[in-house]
Image (cartoon, rainbow, N blue to C red; front, side, top):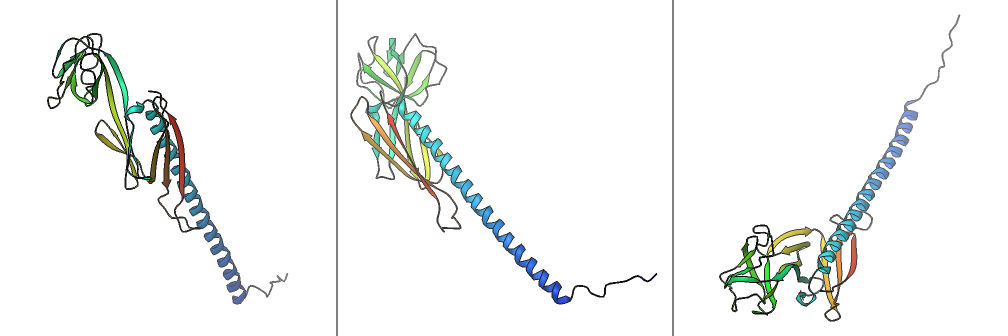
Length: 238
């Protein structure tokens, strides 16, 4: 039996044309994949940036709600403000046995040195008006303040005190820094603006906050970074 074979096959030119068309298609698909991947990366970075800015602003607002309105200080020029304020952490009335550098409260059961680097104020009674005395140590019932700033009037059993913590938010470059009782940490990166504004009078002051942030990388479609601006109004009742 005779086996028939087709005399025709693909010519070299046809193979070259086919390979060229396939090359064009693959190049287009590769470009589409690269563009899609970059767009996805950009969108992911923008979403992360927004979430980071929102969580940072929420953290600031939560602390500020516990702050004392009369202690709020806003310095610097917008959008490079520094926001500082104090928070009441504990309070009570002094008992007997105080000295120029110590105040006692026999009703307390504090943990040793839990108030180290906080501050104590006398807000009524004997010694009223003495503020921002830094606590260097404490026992279960006694606060010891710095020798460099002793009581000018030693508190007695009529003296009401408050323990305070100091807080501030400020920018260093595009990093938002948070300081508590003199200890500073980097809170958030890529923050390009912090604006704070006091509205009203105490009690019931409102602080309007604006936080601006931007992505680290440049978008392929616009050649620019992406930015977000968030706002929060915080009512203070202390």
